[in-house]
Length: 427
Image (tube, rainbow, N blue to C red; front, side, top):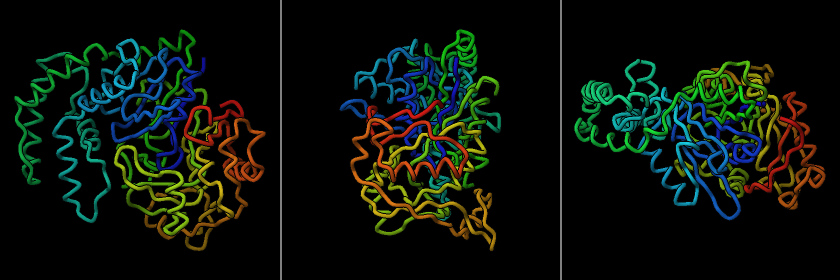
């Protein structure tokens, strides 16, 4: 039995959905352990494209069990819409194929409203939230007033907690200039959700443990990326959960001794969405070229992503924090045709060279990237189906990633489709 983690090693949008779908071939169970429907994974299978937000990427395999762990915050409305979207595309979804943790917290209508109102109130100091209620839901979880999926199975408890929360949240909503929610409308809305979701709710920690005892292969799927982690990301421009490898244990209800390996997904360059310092950003024609070639627009928001050269300082930090055993490098094909490529191998901060990502954004903002230059490769890389067919300059580029981070590359992706992915070595 093997239990392994797949997570983003940069600012998210690295191709985790595609890699999870690819690695799900080796898995019996796929577990999402954090985040909410603020995440977006795109998977292409044949001529079809699937956009996932809450449901694990393993759902595209009929024989896999998919689990939404307790570390995920679940918007029932968004979940049901995603289930219908997938079913319309021919993806079978049943309670035997998808389970939702009975400890997962629910995103309620007041969370979405407050998320939007608070973000608007920040004005020029906005964080760049997706306004889907993620942060306010995690806030309620920490304040111990949240509503969990298990509460949906006890109507009297759910009704009581909903009434208390709406009374409390309406005061905040009105303080920010919003319109108060009607308890009866929300309650009736959720009665419909309960009927549709009740058979999917279970103690998923027990299920995962039992699958381990049965020697099943388990894949733990992360959302967002390392630099969006609430503790180790570019705070405050981060998400509200732990996106790093250590987040698996509390987010899925497993012990650390269950994990055998951790794969960090990394683009061959760097992107991020929203505000905050970005040491290798290319705010020029080259950045625009990479954006258009890589179609760098958010799955969830549609926002254009900021693009820059590959930053090995970030990858080395991700390897350290999450205990990565290998990297899967994506979008090597996007860089094809660029004559000269640059790789950041350090930051100059106050006269000192460092190889880690600082905690303070004020420090990050004044970091001067130290670059090495490499020769590029041509478009033939997209047709490669084995490592031997990869252009020599691309191999040199990837070898530098391994040398600097001390972590091997196990998978290479040269395009969006399943058959444009190749395994080089074990995870």
